[in-house]
Length: 113
Length: 112
Image (cartoon, chains in turn yellow, red):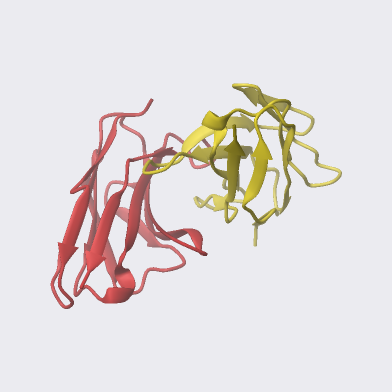
């Protein structure tokens, strides 16, 4: 079945540092790929997505590129802020006739001033 | 943002009592999902619905049932709550099966 592997956290950075959170996947089809963010006490919300190979999703300074050849969708940001502290989830949309998306375990990001 | 609410937002109950959580949407999305989130386990799918009266089990469905009698409401019932069901429960919905999921604010359930 489909699966998502993302780096374990917490990831701890100083403000203005460069961020990478790795995400790799296995899938039977060609699913859409997503990054969701969860702030404390809230539900997940979409950060960005890509629907096909080589697409780049971007939002709020975050970027991720759908790499079919390496089955990856790494999240990057050039300069993090304290307000980016949250848990980040990589996810696959459903594929192959399934109705079920697949989520990674989540990576906690802590940004210090 | 999709209009999605969950009720109650917090609940404390005792072992053995029935509990029903409600998810309500105003977006007319076809697909609805119930997840639980626990430290060290990430998000785990309990049940989902792909239309009115059409539901199916997720990976952690034991001890839970669901009902969807109309598009806007998806109910999750714990027939006899146990302490292992203490968790934060999230409802999510999507327009299509492959589309973005929109999450509710969550219900924090404590079973004593």
